[in-house]
Image 1: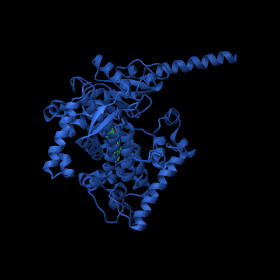
Image 2 (image 1 turned 180 degrees about the horizontal axis):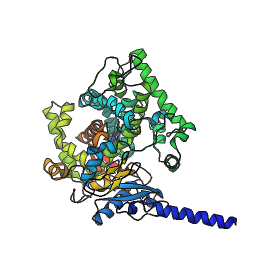
Image 3 (image 1 turned 120 degrees about the vertical axis):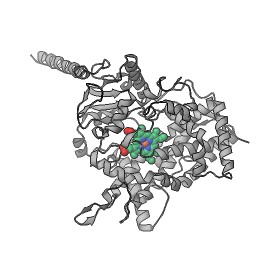
Image 4 (image 1 turned 45 degrees about the vertical axis):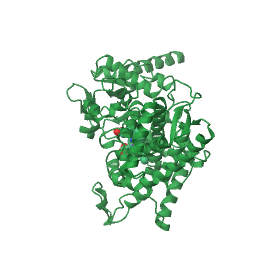
Length: 507
Ligand code: HEM
């Protein structure tokens, strides 16, 4: 009898899974055939394909079937995947009110999870308005000098390699550089992991970002409220306490000891001052019990500084690594870039100013092309919070259904980028940009929920790359194992092995 019951349960479960996997068919949407339990992500979950390669595969299957938008499954969760730029524009921008959230893990008990990336609806809108003034172009001008200052260490370390004629691993060095930048801007500390790779900030930071199947499973399957009650912290209890302690100290230093630094902590603290107004923040004049509410609280600042680290460190080092990799393999592009840098600096009396960087158009084209060919974030997520009829179709996206926008597929599509495997900065000439439909270049996302630090991300990559190319010549060293492989365990599009370079000073 027991045996019969077990068999019946197994058959019932299998039938249920099969039925779940027909969600899109039942809703009149073209779907890619899923595997049982894994849905369409078996190869990615089992580490056989990288996330980006998996996305490209799905995109190309829809494209080959001449389908504009289709359905896939992550395990047994139906996901809508639009590949038509018009539909993508509607979801990210025009009909944003149906797709405000990402559906990512956050609980009040895990303070650091209450950050801009994760939080939802009105809480997100209010906080976004409070944090937006930190990243305006005038604020970028303010932090520019500190950023240039940070590149001095980078130049020094690369100079040591050049002088010793030893090859250097650029992926590791650039990771340390962006760690130092974000530690300085986001936490107000000088950690100098460029010269001290065992630095505690770098060690804890790397640990927080390590991919974990257990974490992914917990957050996808277990109720978040229950995780909160169990005191679950996404980054681990030790790392959470470490980061919270750092920010609280930084805030105390500024408020009690009058320390002033040109960084994000300071810029957000400015939003706390009574009487501070900015056109983006409606909450500033809000009152509770007749007492004006602070525009931003210490807990909110703490959670944001931490997400700046998580969202900013690896994305930025990755784009710089891929840029240098391509420059080393395309010497003509590297030489042309150096010529531009020299010409613009000469016109600015040799001074590296914010305005000078803005005039380096070829540099902008190169970084954009690196972001096109290797978008650090290969897909965007949204969750439908209000029933949505996809314009021009009979398709209805129901509340609770997730949407995945395949950035990597779009940016490798020959319809928009001829020879997409070739690194070609001319893809970003004014003429070629004008030929492409909108919403076909999405490395920072788009719409109200796009990357809040787009300007800073671009500036950091530009200043880092230009300070290196101005001073050094880069060639690929034969210790680099080609073809390079993308890390199959990472949600960021980063390289698996090291990228070894020979570096020579420009005489
Ligand atoms: C080249 C570097 C970077 C890239 C490619 C990048 C890319 C992205 C992307 C694709 C998103 C999701 C956008 C969407 O869903 O539409 C995002 C969101 C975000 N990024 Fe970045 N990012 C970069 C650097 C940074 C840096 C340096 C910071 C912080 C200092 C940062 C902070 C954030 C935050 C807070 C969000 C969430 C915004 C919100 O939901 O309101 N990013 N980023």
